[in-house]
Length: 272
Image (cartoon, rainbow, N blue to C red; front, side, top):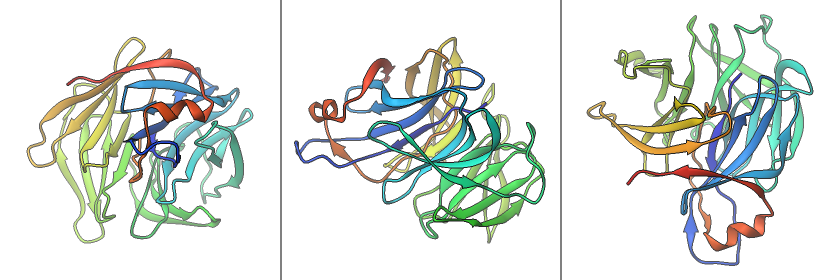
């Protein structure tokens, strides 16, 4: 099961100060998910008040330019490719329907990654040992296979221009677009498996890894040199946050975060 850390923003009028806000999914067990929020201004992470979803195996998510949060996974004990819209205020879910693939979904063909393409506005998803698909979140019947890839992709991220897709198969980093096709950028870039990939608001490519018991680290990948540096370390009960995505927006912070009505504090340590 995949857990997701998705970075985005919302608007509040109570303050002129700004901060980046992260929304994500903590994989609390094999069939339960907890939606969270991370305030990057002070490093605090909290459980969204209505974000505990028992028997929901939420696998991948992305946030579009309108700050709408979408996710794919199994809901209410049913393992299939359901699409949900999640509230960034309290973590509640709205079911939008189910993606219909031409071949059946199983434990080896689950959707494991998602990222919005800013050029098309479509949500791209990675399906295990199958390939990349995209769809309009307003029309699930628009599902289109974009690239056939019989490979176990673990994480994916479009750059902000929507001109290059980056993805990882555990340890190795690849790029893809229509012009250049698939390119291997670095083999065995990490010692162990990468579980998430996303660009932050400054254009930095961040990979997420399980870095120890109950701990999750974000690693900055320098695309010019392919060198690595630690962005932050997240402490969670499961240590399992496996996908992330940044929104280009910001919200007033840090004092106004309390107005969101969230609860259940957990922590993040960011190295400086």
